[in-house]
Image (cartoon, rainbow, N blue to C red; front, top):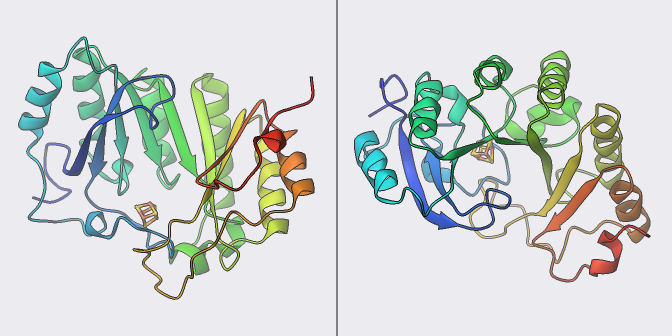
Length: 249
Ligand code: SF4
């Protein structure tokens, strides 16, 4: 199976999650294939366009049919779902079955996202911002186009869809100053929710990245970022006091 398939090619599935689709019990479908090679990526089996481990689309549809009325949403994650021409038809098929849909994307395919939004195929979207756009080549192996990203953000904000933008934090990849800059840019663009997530040590593409105890930002920066958004979250940093994350009443 490969990404030219007329069906959406799924490299893995998480049957049930309560954390990947805000407020919904959901199934996650991991798209096979990704255009990037992020240094911190831990989904290495999903990166090649082809794999012998993919799941058949009809089997997935049957799985979802069996869970209608129980599972509320389906998350299209990856890999990079927007690389696949069959994404839009897969979203439509899942929606017809009565599920809410969410998309996790690296932001390189704004046209696909715009089409999905125009056709009301999405209920929620999460976009990775890997770092300062000028550093993308070093982080992901590919350059990033400022205008395409800005258009993508504008389209998402204008659609009014539930959204989150998120950055994986490791001091060797993105500095505190860059995170503040990214947060200012997103906030000024109208983004409502920003998430910082701790680097997951163990299976990263770049084996030189060492484990980190937390996201490593100063309290002052965390408070500044928190105050730029209506919703702000830090994921995976157990040591971070929840007081930082609460806005003063
Ligand atoms: S972390 Fe990067 S390389 Fe890995 S799946 Fe996501 S976008 Fe692709």
